[in-house]
Image 1: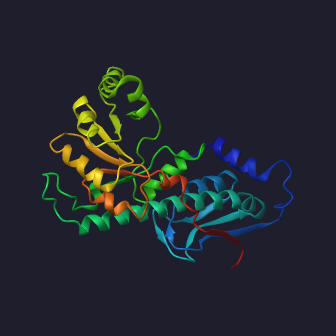
Image 2: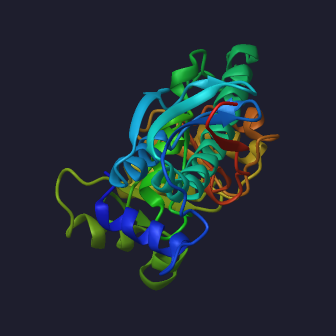
Image 3: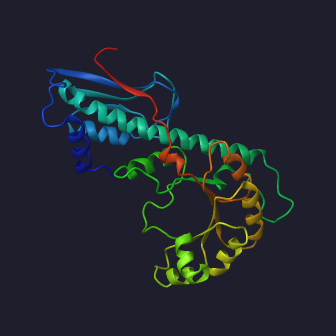
Amino acid sequence: MITDTQIERWLREDVGHHDVTNDVPGGTTGRLVAKEEGVVAGLEAATAVFEYLGVDVTERLEDGTRVAPGDDLLSVKGSAREVLRGERVAVNLVGHASGIATRTRAAVDAASGALRASEPRATTGRERRTESDDVRIAATRKTTPGLRGLEKRAVVAGGGDTHRLDLSHMVMVKDNHVAELGLEDAVAHFRERVSFATKIEVEVETVADAPRAARAGADVVLLDNMTPEEVERAVDTLEGDDVLIEASGGITLETVPDYAATGVDVISMGSLTHSAPSLDVSLYTGEH
């Protein structure tokens, strides 16, 4: 949900206290246009910015739409002064969000391709996935302060999963907790304090600790900073355990296929939000 407070802050940052640049009389129309191929996102936020300024958004694509160079993303009509005032904020939001959606879609497609090409594993009853929806590409909390909502929605637009939106959505037992309390005691400590509806995820860094985490009561076992070969061995050790298995830590678009073929349920990637390049978009006003 984009709030008026957010929009005011974005506009105040760009417009400042005395905007002469955009003091243009009359009315105009505008088109937000893609200049490269990608997956569009952030159009809801851009629409909110223009509508806050009293500018009508007359057409708009749905977030998650694949676009090509020259495609119109949204169209506006209103005061030239207000259209120009909203331009840079809208372009920045859509470019940033679309870059995240595009990177997410690339990761989802890479995982799906690996799943279609993989064969059932002979070493365990947990077969490699054969349906693209069985391995989720998820974001992390490595988001830009103040823009998490925009960035998480962009991940969804690209076909990914938000993971937890904030610390209240799930307990994650990390290495610091284990160092202080020990793995089993850390899980027990948090299990006593959470609602029955709250899942507990346990981060492990060795293959041997994966079944320990499951036996301790983890709902999700996070295999952190492991190679695909190590992840596959850890998946084998969890055969028969009723847990979700997540791989994370340094996974790139190039290595996603290797991790997707290991049998994990989730692949989480901080790079979806912190390293996605913006999609090139521009707003053209008047007749172009």
